[in-house]
Length: 337
Ligand code: NAD
Ligand code: UDP
Image (cartoon, rainbow, N blue to C red):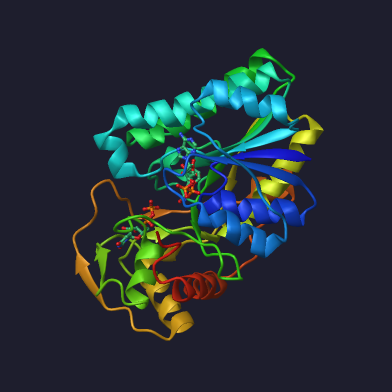
């Protein structure tokens, strides 16, 4: 298949590009570099031996998307491009609606105009909010807890309406749990700008000496060790989940929504211990109060991905930590400037 990856130089997009090429597909990447670096393209070339077909484009720019569609002929798109910081979404909701929702509509419109009606969409487990009813099945109620989550839910609904209105469309919304890890080469990985908002990149920066200690947000949750529990999955497993999803589009499934997670919950303290083991470095921690908006636990029921896509996560927590450490220790400042 020939596949357009919006947000293709980002964390998940870049790993998915590798997995798609390995599976024998052709990829074209599009990104505006708002949260990624051009250096990713050289790293992808080194890993895959393929010079990336790339457009520096904003996904909200319909005229630019039209030019790309005229120059290439795609079988499907995987739509990653969107800003993703929960806190920022509360400060700048319009930025999130313009890029997250507006970008999706612009992409779908240009796809429709050029007869491309297969899309995989990056949704998130954030659409479930927090529930006591675990593991989370796709039919669980959705709850919006911030504008970022609303953009994800709105885009899912747009895709569902589109598939209802025109049966030629196929769309799979993938609800990711907590992607971590890096390509085993250590050449690409997660490179957050500023202070990392997420646990794993923060832990990695403590291990490499960029930050003195990890603040654990709450040790009084009703979880086995009191710290928050999440479903961490290796980004290469996630990337392979996209290969399975985009290939599944060829069977004309209409609209579907599928969790991508391991199905197991891991606590903050377990992450810290696993990372200390993988890196051989101490991770000093301090306990602070709960982070606003956080809940105790979230993990997937991963059975639908297995039955519909034939996909299951296979990589262990030790492998996730070892691969993050290889990326972080080889690139202490990420992709640099
Ligand atoms: P990322 O920021 O690394 O990648 C997103 C890419 O999109 C970046 O390279 C950025 O420059 C680009 N981009 C953003 N707005 C754009 C625009 N208007 N036009 C063109 N390019 C644009 O993030 P990621 O972790 O790779 O996430 C990819 C997708 O997966 C996002 O939609 C995100 O919401 C979703 N998601 C991520 C997680 C996670 O924990 N990483 C979890 C659930 C869902
Ligand atoms: N967390 C933490 N310290 C940090 C960042 C995160 O203790 O510096 C905790 C957070 O409270 C949650 C878990 O780590 O229990 C995962 O947080 P992350 O932001 O990575 O994922 P999300 O909460 O969005 O699922």
